[in-house]
Length: 518
Ligand SMILES: CC(=O)SCCNC(=O)CCNC(=O)[C@H](O)C(C)(C)COP(=O)(O)OP(=O)(O)OC[C@H]1O[C@@H](n2cnc3c(N)ncnc32)[C@H](O)[C@@H]1OP(=O)(O)O
Ligand SMILES: O=CC(=O)O
Ligand SMILES: [Mg+2]
Image: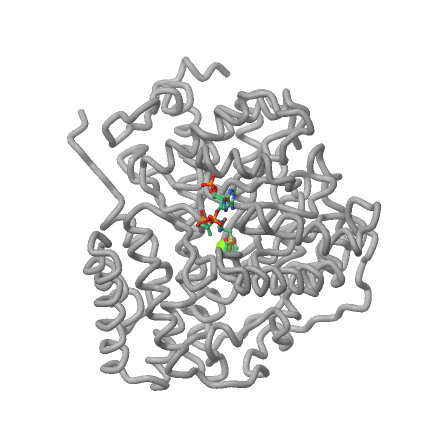
C-alpha cells in the first residue's frame, strides 16, 4: 500500500515551527492517521473500561490474578521473542527527555540504553513534542561515534493523553499514537539499517487488553512500512497496581514483540494511592518512608523478576530519585543511595536498571557488574523461590509510620514546584536533591488528597502551607507561574473527587496552543 495515495486526514492545529516540516510531512501524517483510524476507537473503549474498573475497585470489588487467564499463567511452554540486537546487555539504561543536549550527554555516558522519554520526563508542549521527534530523527540519521552509542528506546506518552495539535476525524489524535507513529515513520528503517530496530518503552498500562492494543499497533505499523513482523521490541512498565496482577498476560499479549518488564516504582505508588486511597488500610506514611524494601513493594519487584525470567524477558529496575548535586557530601550520599538500590536490584535478579544522570552510569554499572560478572544478563535465574500472593501485593499497612507535618509540607512543595516547572515546559527537575517528574508529582498531590480524606491533616492547614510555599516560590523566582500552579494543585489535590491524572486537564489548560489555522 502506498502511503502517498492516501489523503492525509490528520490536521495540524498549530503554527509551523522551526524545522517542523521535517517531521510533519504529509506521508508521516498519513501514517499517524492510519494508526488513529485503526485504533482510536478501541483506545477510547479501553479508557472507559479503566474508569469502570476504578469504580468497581472503589466499591470494594477484590483485586486478584484473573481467573480467565489461568491457562496462560499455568502454561510453562511459551516464551517472549529472543532479545533483539542492542537489547541483550541492558545493565545500565539512562533516561531523559529527547533534547539535543541530553541526547549528546546520554550518547557519551557509557550507558547501554538511552530511553528517550515523551512521558514522565517531558512536559508535552507542542514544541517539546516536535523538537523531541526532530532530535530522534537527527540522532538516528548520524553515524555512531567510535565505540558506538547506547541503544535507543523511545517511550511514547500513555494511552490517557491526547495530542490536541493533531486532529483526526474531528478529534485529537491519541498522544501515544502520535509519538509512536512519528518516531516509527521517520526512524524505524534507520534503526534497522544501523543493525538494531524500533524499540519502545510502554508506560502506564493497566491491563492485558491495553498490551494487546499496542501489539496490534505494532503489527499494523510494521505492515504499513513493509518491516518484518516481530522487528519491534517493547519493554512494558509495570507501574499500575492492576497491571501487577497481569504481568504474565501482558508479556503473553506482546510476546512476539516483548523485550521485558520494568518496575516503574513511582507511578506504581501513585497508582496504589489513586486506586485505594479511599481505604484506611491503604493510608501511606510520608513519601520517604515508602521505600523499595517495604514488603508490598518488594513483593511487586520479586514477582516482576520471576515473571520475566520464566518467560525469557529482561527484568529492568527503575529510577532511584537521588541525583548528585554540587555539594560534595550530598553527592556522596546520593551516589551511595543509588548504589544500594542498584545492588539490591542486581542481587534480586534484575538484568539492569535506570539512572537519571550520566554521573550515575558508573555506579549502576559497578553494582550490576558485581553480580553479572561476564554475563550480559541473568535470565537464567528463574527465581522459583518467589511466591507472591494478592495479599502480599496489597498489604500496604505493613510499613510503619504516620504522615508527619513535614511530610505534608514537603509533598505540597514538590507538587507546587513541579507544576510550575511543567507549566513552563520542563518535565523533569531536581528539588531538594531528588529527581522529580510527572510520576513523583502525582504521588505528592495524591498523598495530600489521601491525607485530607482521612483527616490526617485539615484542609485549612493544607491551604496555609500551600500559601506559604507559593509565596516562597514566588520570592525565589518571580517569573514562575505560581498562581497557575497553585490553582492546579487546588484542582488536583483538594477536590472531593480525585482526578485520575493531573496531566490531561493541565495540558488542555496550559500547554495547548491553538492559533488560527486554516
Ligand atoms: C519516574 C520516571 O519515569 S523516571 C524516568 C523519567 N525521568 C527522567 O528521565 C529524568 C532524567 N533526568 C533528568 O532529566 C535530569 O537529570 C534532571 C532534570 C533530573 C537534572 O538535570 P540537570 O539539573 O541538568 O542535572 P545536572 O546539572 O547534574 O546535569 C549535568 C549535565 O548532565 C546532563 N544530564 C543530566 N541528566 C541527564 C540525563 N538523564 N541524560 C542525559 N544528560 C543528562 C545535563 O544536561 C548537564 O549537561 P550540560 O552540562 O551539558 O548542560
Ligand atoms: O516510569 C517510571 C516510574 O517510576 O513511574
Ligand atoms: Mg512512570
